[in-house]
Amino acid sequence: MEKKIAVIGGTGIEIEGEALFIDTPYGSVMSRLTKLGDEEVLFIPRHGEGHIPPHRVNYRALLWAAKAWGALRVISTNTVGTMSWHQVGSFVVPADFVEFTKSRPSTFFEEEAVHVDLTNPYCPEVRRSLIEGANDAGALVATGIYVCTEGPHLESPATIGMLRSFGDVVGMTGYPEVVLARELELCYASICIVTNPAAGMRRDAMSAAEITGEMAKSARLLRDIVGAAISMMPEERRCQCDRALTEARL
Ligand SMILES: [Zn+2]
Image 1 (cartoon, rainbow, N blue to C red):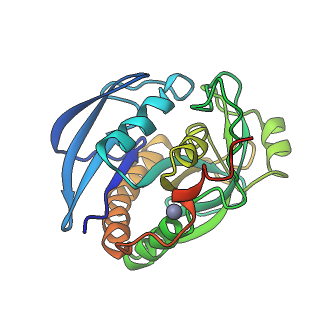
Image 2: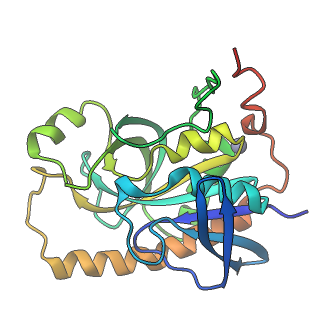
């Protein structure tokens, strides 16, 4: 039995493999077929081959492509700023999210009233595998609430002052993926690299070289974490994610 895992990779993670273009109703998606451990994995670079900015990413196409390939589970990697004094270079596996985006299509059901339940917005099984994978890889990992902003600009100190009362880390790419995955009954969880303190929260200024060095170190660790998480993932799904639409329609 295959685990059927897709990885949507954010900034800082690149995985080589055979290029595969997947057609979706939302456009074509470039992906790479690769092997991590014993598992065949579909790697989808979120920002394409160039660098599509966060507010222009075709999130629906990415999730649809994962589903069309046959994925049952999606691991997402995201970079975040910390609003809770996490160590730069450490990792956060979100348990919940709050979003302040403005212009992103956030549903596959434009013409139909479908209300998926988000009591547990991230798949508990994929989350557990990511936390165990991070521990296995020797990484520092925490859980917390992910706040998604529209970007592409970074936040002002006053905005961070407000957002700190909503969550622990802030990024631009975690939403609407988490919701779109639920609408497709895919298991989905995210592992976030903490790359910097959020605006106005810097105790000591970090040089660009230090940030680049941290990113490189974290990128290697991130690959190890994703690999370990995939090998630790149980083959059979025992979560509720595959029944998300059962009671979602009015
Ligand atoms: Zn699940």
